[in-house]
Length: 116
Length: 112
Image (cartoon, rainbow over all chains, first blue to last red; front, side, top):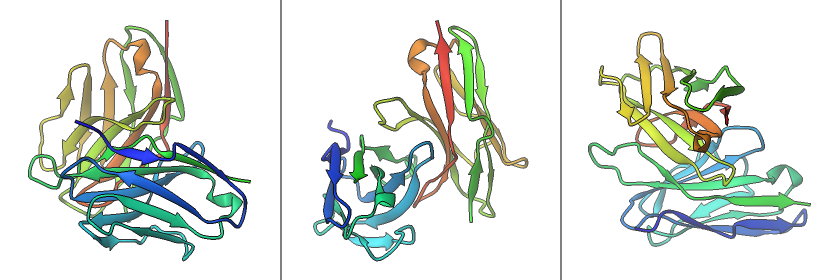
C-alpha cells in the first residue's frame, strides 16, 4: 500500500510569506505527527493529532505555526510570516495505535522549506 | 522530559564488518518504546528496529540487533555483515503513544 506522502517536496519562499505544507498519512492510520528537522540535527516534535483533534501541540515554536486535520486524514501545517530560521525539512509521520504496533511511526519523505 | 544522546557523530567501517552504534536515554517512565531509524540521503526516515521496554529479550531484524540495557538506559544497535546500502544517518528515538524524541544522529559510512 501507499506510504505517507508529503507535498510539495521542496518549497522556496520569501521572508514574510505564508506557506502550507501537506501530509497524506497511510490509509487507516489514526495518529498523525509533524516534526521539524534542521540541518545536522535529529527531528524535533511539533504537533500530534489523534483523529481530528490536536492531542499535543507543545512543540509548535510560536503562534506563527498552526496545523489542522479537519477530516481525520490529510493534515496541513501552516506557517505565517515565515522567517529565515524556519528553513528546515518538515517531516510528517502516521501510526496506527494498536497492540503490537503501538508507538511505531511511519514517515513521509519530508518537505524541504527554504526561506530566503 | 526525555532526552536521547548519541555520542558518536560519525562512524566508518569496511563492507562486511560489524558495527555498533551507541545510544543512551533518560526518562522517568516505566512503559516506553525505543527505536532505531535510518535516514539515507533521500531523507526518508525508515524504521530499522523497535524494542518494548517491558521485554527483556533484545529485538533482532535480520542483520540488525539491539543491546537493550534498561537499568543503564542504554540502547545500542549492532549491524552485522554491513553492506554499502547501510550508509546513512542513524537516529535513536524514545517514544510511546505520542511524540518521539530523537538523538542527534550518527552518520555511518560503509566503505567498499
